[in-house]
Image (cartoon, rainbow, N blue to C red; front, side, top):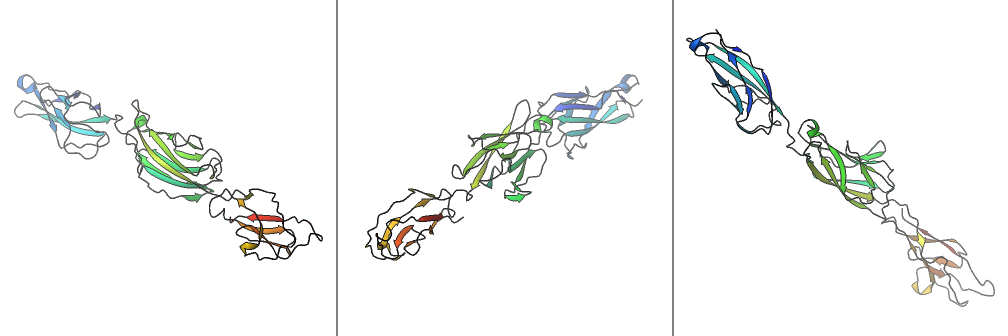
Length: 331
């Protein structure tokens, strides 16, 4: 009689299982008597694993039929083995039968999420809308690496998508995101499930124009593994601050017999006005202009703010003048 298989044809094993651990006991019975009923087992090393592996990391006891781990297992390399086992009796001529046993390797949380590259950058205007997507980073499973970090305008917003991988399965590969450091004022938020970084508050270039955030991605395994990367965010200045005169109103006294000068002659200055603009260059470059007042008597140097006489004054004709000078930025 030919040996007949009685054992299950499938088994599972954790990928971190120690060498020599029993995975499955294969068994076949032969209805013959005496020598003809004794069965021996052999493992065909030509059986194929989930990735086409030819050499299997298992050993089989020829008499007891115990299938043991013979080498380290890695589910991320091979997750399934199809093992051909032959049961042969000791008769003459010997009879045999072959069966395929499927061993599935179960995942262990032995891989951490991985950012690649580990540093990204983005530039946003200081008047960015709250809720605007700044930088989107998806750390997922089995995704191609996307290393684009350029900023583009899309549907009214700025976004960048980058990808990394956690090759574990199930919860071991499910990623959660958090801003670990670099934003004590909580000007930004990150979506825990998607990794999208958004503007949370109104930004102000004059208050802070550079951020270096640390983003942490951790998996959901029992023994949590994580990776981190940095995100450099540059806030771009917008011309949102008007010039402010430092000592307005200004008061000046001029002798009525003061001679006529020239707007470009420094010796003829009768007053000087100065304004400040909190914006950054080139927005804060100022020019000055006489907006209201007697332009036949006074002139203003557009770059220095110096006020000049254009002709002699006569107190008996007019004792005072009111000038309105405008400071104009370069926005």
